[in-house]
Image 1 (cartoon, rainbow, N blue to C red):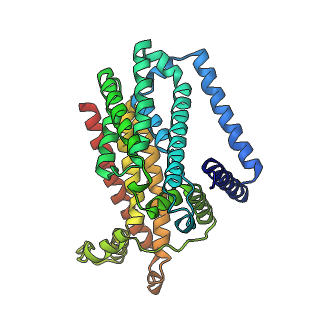
Image 2: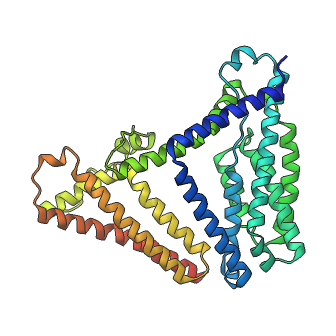
Image 3: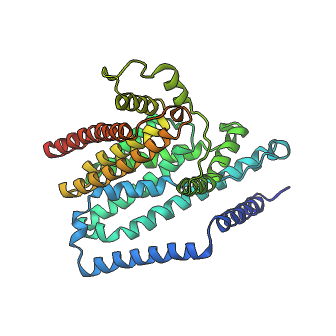
Length: 375
């Protein structure tokens, strides 16, 4: 009989070797050295500023600290190292597969707690400045218990998008409320104990377990692919993307077909064509939604108005650069090259498009500022 721990360790080491080869293929050792050097410099500046003057820590919003710990914890992935061949050779050995899954869950919880502990240690100067000893104990207890529950929940049959969103909102708005920390700690402990008892190989089909492991194991490859795609785009190499379900739905059911401008000048026709092209591609206008969401989040997290204004100006600059890139892609479309557009009308239409997008973004900025001032 195969020793489970030996099998798990062998597959884990094999996967780590593949990950190292993948990193070595994409990055030279000098790049990793500079990344570590910059990280060491930033940590040194953080420690030095804390030792010399810790007044700036009082201006950091606690909700931002709270959110950063959540992001660190949620990035932990479950790995059980199942292989497709296990469906033939190990699927009947239920006890073996079940023990292998439990080792994966134990590793998941341990790594999640280690990440949460490291985050708490790094942010300890903030806690020492703003919390007393009792508050710190309750908060650390809440974070650790919530970490165990949330990681178990993400890999359970309870997982639903709406429920995940509700848990995130409850966690995010529990900042600076000791009573909420105690309630969340008790609920997390009870639910975590229940979910631990429900960890069983038979709770899901083998294909579901295999799919979870393959998705979590491919996270590094996914981010490296995104990085390489970004580098290729910066060097003028375009990737070919298939249409998503959302793109097909919009192109079929939700397209602007009527005229936008009554006056049919060349600049208006060009602007109208650009707006309709833009509206038919959600993969394009989602960038503008991300910028608006970033600014809106900044309104609630940043403590000072001048910080929000700086973020808004940076977002405005990003939106302007993105619009320039989209306009270039639009004019490079083969159908647009069938017509001879006058250069003056192209510049005029581009300026009108820029004004329209900046006005829509300005509405979001002003609305966010008013909400922040009122509340």
